[in-house]
Image (cartoon, rainbow, N blue to C red; front, side):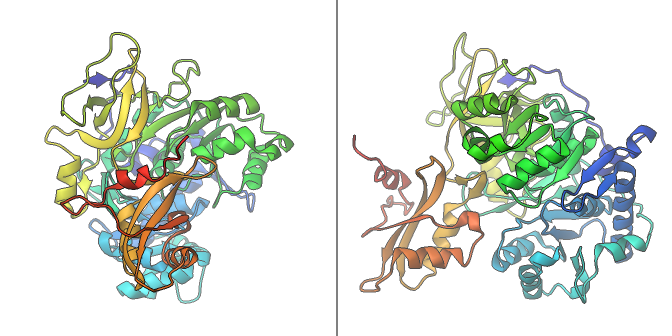
Length: 529
């Protein structure tokens, strides 16, 4: 059993609203919480709290409360904070939806989550409306924040000034958010995270991530993703930092925002680190305000981290987590020399973990010196999810009787207590930090009339980025082409899930139990030297 180098911290028994906004004092209310670079508009903490309460009141006046689930399909704009926390303050549950999702994917998530409302913005209204119509969600429960004829908008709801409701629930058991994750295998599942989970992880992160009141955080990682939700939005709000929102990533806009708003703390995924390390345009901007770059969502190699840090004269470090952990369990300490650049750091306060040999099930002991053998990482702590929504089997496969979450990731630990992630047990593909479940793409491919069988694995492209590759058994004399396969998938899924390579083969290798032998497919990717 491995423990955190930090002492345990007290986790407040509060809702996430009371935890974040209940302690605002006079000095805090005038601080800038959010900046919208598109308009230059600033929202102070006091104003944000008032908006959250007003939105909660408007929802309550329409019957929304404990037991209701609302979908939020919205990019990173200041209104996201109002809506997200307004729903939670009303006692309802939020299921956050990837802004790139197609109508079919939105409908699937809303249906599984049991959502009866959908909140979006006008650029995403076509796919939102199609999904809502398929589920029978009426126009009065399809909120378009920036306005659309026939739908409620944010201004209308806030100006009603309906009082926030009195709500009562147990923070430890009441589901606050339902982000969707593929877990260790399979198609996306609703991850049930309680108010206590969210509060705990922010409180844990406060002691491991050195974000302060004077920091300006560039919020480019999506709030709909648990990384953005907890580490950007909620942690920044708790620390009374300022969030500069970005609806989507564009390198020039990213650098411009840093320069214009003097951003000091960046939370990123590895592809952005690669750009900071290598792209020539970086030198055209003054980003000297940046003091720390924190990478997550996928492993960052040491060479890229070092190159990026040296180029922009900032600390570059990383952490580890997953949706099921709310999401952070490990983070590199504030001291830039405390751990190697390829390390995900040390355990957060109140977290313990085990490394278990996946072949024998035996715990790997701490090494007396150097690095340990590799084992599957199991994590226990107050940030561990309640379980998967309506999926007892998947929950039992991931959460054991002792409360340890089996991450499916292979890690090593150093004698000094820091960890590295070295491999994955799970079959998930991680493309630019996004999780892609092969089973989802395989099911879609099999729906094509010219496809007899299919399998999907992650392979490396020329930039060493993992991408989805499909192995396809085509129907005889069908004339199916690689472009036809890729175009078919692209029309049905979000851009990050698109198949990037296709190879036609005669048969998909499978075990006697019918499982796809992905290791055999991966072996085909090895180029003899």
